[in-house]
Amino acid sequence: MKINIVSLFTGMFETPFSDSIIKRAREKGLVEMSMHDIRDCTTDRHRTVDDTPYGGGAGMVMMPEPLVQTVESIEREKKSISILMTPQGEPFSQKIAHELVDFDQLLLICGRYEGIDERAREIIADREISIGDYVLSGGEIPAMVLVDAVVRLIPGVLGNDQSIEHESFEEGLLECPQYTRPEVFRGKRVPPVLLSGNHAEIEAWRRREALKRTRVRRPDLLKDLPLTERDEG
Ligand code: 9D3
Image 1 (spheres, rainbow, N blue to C red):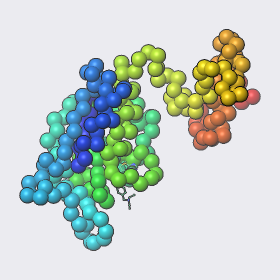
Image 2 (image 1 turned 180 degrees about the horizontal axis):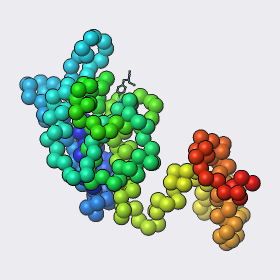
Image 3 (image 1 turned 90 degrees about the vertical axis):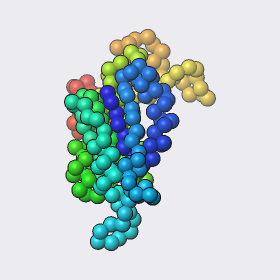
Image 4 (image 1 turned 90 degrees about the horizontal axis):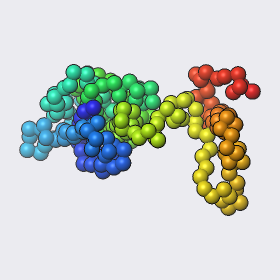
C-alpha cells in the first residue's frame, strides 16, 4: 500500500512512522510512505498558505491554490482514495479501517487553522474522517491514528502471534483481564482458573469477564452484538 500525506507539518511524521510495527511494515516493503509539504506548492516570496476568511471572523483559512496543487501533483494508483482529516468528518472506526485496507493508495490530507476553503474541499476530498469529538490543532495526529489502524490490518504486517482475530474491537467486546507472572503480586492472586490448565473453562471465564467489563464500561457496544444463550445467563 502507498500512503501519501499532505500537510504543513510533514516533520511531525518522522518518528511515529519510524518505529515498531509501521517501521517493520515499511522495511518489508508492505507500505510505502511519502510526505508532501503544502508550502512547496506556494509561489509567493513568503510561501503563504492561509488567508483571512471572507465575511470576516477570527482565525485563518487554508488557501485553495497550494493545497489543490499539492494533492494534484501526487501520482494516483488504480485503486486510490483521498481522505480529508477534519472535525466535520465521519467518526473513524475499526469498520472504516477495514474498508481502507482494500485500497492500493491512501492520500491523507491534514488541515490546519480553522479549516480549508470549501471549494478545495469539494475538489480534493473523496471522503472526510474525524477521529472523535475533541479539538486538536490539526489533522496530523488524526492521520497518524488512521495509518496505524490501517497498516496493522495489511496481511503480513503483524506476526502470527499477534493475530488480529481475537482483538477486542474485532469481536465487538472489550478485552478480558490479563495476567502474567508472578502468581501473587502485592497480595493479589491470579484467578485460579487461569492456572487450572482447563482450556474450556479458561475460554468460558474469559468470555464472561469480557462481557462483564463491556456491560459496565461500554454498554453501547453490546447493542449490535450477537449474544449466545450461554452469554445471557
Ligand atoms: C472552533 C471550531 N472548530 C471546529 C470544531 C475549529 C477547528 C478546530 C480544530 C478547526 C480545525 C481544527 C483542527 N482539527 C483537525 O483538523 C482535525 C480533528 C480534530 O480536531 N478532532 C478530531 N478529529 C480531527 S481530524 C482533523
